[in-house]
Amino acid sequence: MRFELMASMMCANYGNLEKEVHDLAEGGIDSYHIDIMDGRYVPNFAMSLNDMHYIASVAEKPLDVHLMIQHPNNHIGLFLNNLRPGDTVYIHPEAEYHPSTTLQRIIDAGMVPGIAVNPGTSVETVMEMLRIVKKVLVMSVNPGNAGQMYLPYVGKKITKLLSMKEDMGFEIYWDGACSADKILEYAPKGVQGFVLGTTLLFGKNRAYGEVLQDIRELRF
Image (cartoon, rainbow, N blue to C red; front, side, top):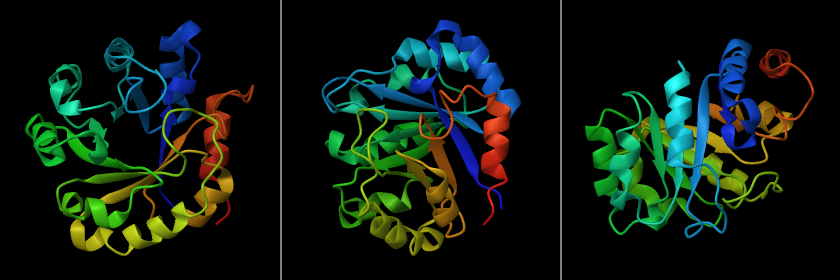
């Protein structure tokens, strides 16, 4: 079974970030997940525009940029100018007055448009945008910090989105508290990819290639 694995780069070792990027690529990661936080939309600061630019400059594989910032349309050009066609940019609909305008700018720049859906955000409130985006990043934890506990009611939201994805033309991705049992349950149901952080990938004192191989060889 083929599913995508994305490395949550806010969990990487910043003492040698270039080596982290290359080791993850050699280990078989599919893309680099970049969490940008402004301390306003979420109560934390994480990666910056410069972090994203550096990773883009040394990485050959795509970037998934998750903008956890207030009014992303005000700054979207800064991010798009530092990315490559085919990279993904997610916004949170609640953070923008007119999210469809921001998504159109992402599309016009040749990027893959996505929305991130918080645990407390209902599918009904983002329904119109599901026909615009190509990716839906479902947050299984409240955004802003790594290492949080999974919120079990998110599973019902994923089930609802899975029933709609073929008709509306989007793929579903999992972000937050991603453990092996979540991949075993949701990859066969149609979740396309999983963001890996401290639960499965980072801080294991093992080569990334070994960890990623174990995940790919999970018995479904």
